Image (tube, rainbow, N blue to C red):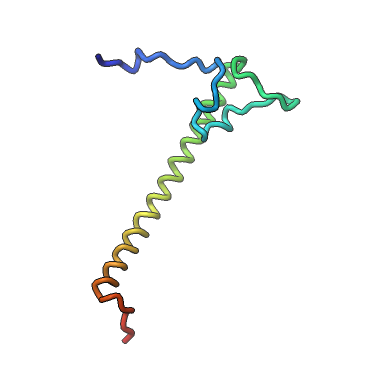
Length: 100
């Protein structure tokens, strides 16, 4: 049986959500407090607040993509350079390079 994306039920975001159900990078997006410091009950979130939460999650996703991209772009050349240098060093017999 094949389930289409359109037939998948959406989660009810206004019912209480346990922290375990959230991705840790989104925790700060769902942590809203009133002016007196009390946590806002998630069952009472308005549609506008849910839209702000969705935008916060998109921003977190963008930064995660940028961070991972930079790490990949920098890490791969460093690993290749280190591997190549170690192979050259091994084939020379583990002796330092001769200075002319």
